[in-house]
Length: 253
Image (cartoon, rainbow, N blue to C red; front, side, top):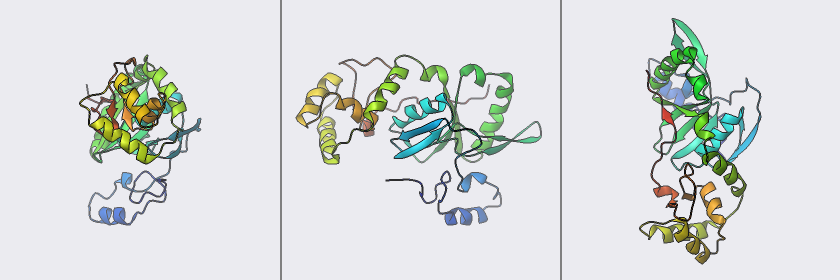
């Protein structure tokens, strides 16, 4: 499945804009630029392309932090869609209109939209940026869009950075959907499962031990990658996994 022509999606070129145009005509404050289809931001050089599991296609990234952020969000069951530098917004500061392009845009499974800054903490806390974040957050909040940070020190923390890197080689493994469905049903019948519990169940359904990581990387299973993995690490059906804190919400000082 591909999402380039996802009708009504404000992030993607080629979306059906008719419902959005009708909605804009129905509102006096029709200058809501977020509601028109837009292209990826192309003002910065693309470093490479990342093949996203959730998007089912390659998406460009413009920095190592953006790539790590997409790898992290790609593994989170709560994330329905993601885009790098989805569009440019306008915000007001000191009586002037300025522009802002987020690093990553997300739509969650509850339908909510969020713009994410993937930055070094020291950069985010520079006085110049501390002054503009409240203005950006306010502009996004007016469009019912969340604003949050994913900090570089979190993405580079051990063991998370090692796990994110290791998971990438398992994302291309292909499994029968019926076999995956049977496995998940079997696991759902259990009160709780650890890696030690899951390995023999995998074998019962014709999987290899390493397939555990492929099933995690493809969002069928979920483990907490921020912690060291051992035989006693918990494993969940990704649809029933506890919701982790996948970013730091912005709160004005």
